[in-house]
Length: 417
Image 1 (cartoon, rainbow, N blue to C red):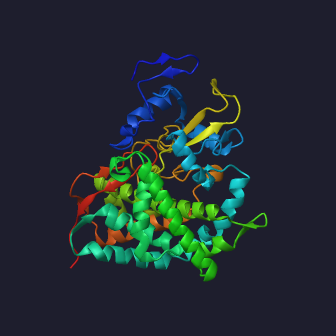
Image 2 (tube, one colour):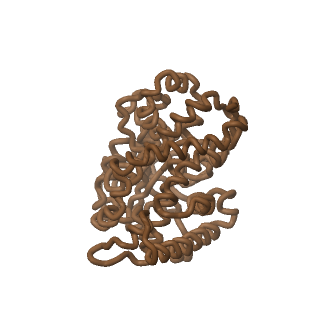
Image 3 (cartoon, rainbow, N blue to C red):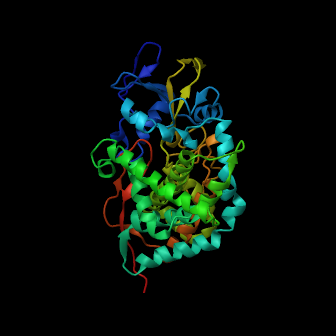
């Protein structure tokens, strides 16, 4: 890994292939990205299929490319690193209409449709209710003295919040949980069923059918929820099509629970692994807002998104050709030594903390305000009620170079009486 060679004009080459999910199965590979930031911040990653892609690992470069969607497009080849076969791509073509894969100005028009539901004003109104939800979630495990932190605590809060906002019955949240895991866990044998992408395609189809029924119900009987809002809004004088509605449903339900779940799980793991930082929070609860930002920086729940060059461009002396993929690595940017002094240290009081855990630019996370609220309230209640939580067994991580997730994390604590 430490002996680079030059490949054409692509720059130094190391024994690194970030397209391999196994590289992330034990967590964030800090040493790999530290090397890339230092030696090859614009790195050509060769692939077995011969295509390859650029790796952007420094903060300032991730920032710059994120803001230039005229040159670096989300739409042309989608935002996910994983490459699908031609047949799979055709079957999944409808999902390219997700906002995740759109460029401005189209992306801006569709984002405005749901922005109001996630505004700071609307989210602040939810605080009391979210705290009540959190209390009930902890109530369900507090007297047992043990639980699986991911499935019984971390997953429950964002799931309950987003299904309620969308108008999905609470009792159906576990169906959403399973579909969500399958859709984002396409590289994990447990979630994919070992059947390649077939299970993901089935999950997408089942979720679309569920969404269609929900939207049909809301057209007939409107309610105060996002499903009703989406059936009523218009873009350039036209109502959303069934496919557009289904894509909104998928994006909001999956993104609304997966990333926050992983932030809460990863945050708890770091507080367990860093007892001195947990002691700081227990002693000074006013640190919770900065702790939330540090958790998101540290976990960086979305590992990477892809952009595609729309033209030939010289980027720091590297010739990026039209049509080549450019990958943005948020976890690396969030540990960049030029921006985060001692960035490999977990510090609940870190300030300033201008991390990119929620992205930057047009695709800045729609639910960032909601995620911050959920994470803050969850840790406020956990520290108050279950302050001595510890691992009961090693966490099981998601095999993925897309999301930094934990599938299960057995914990124990002093039971409440």
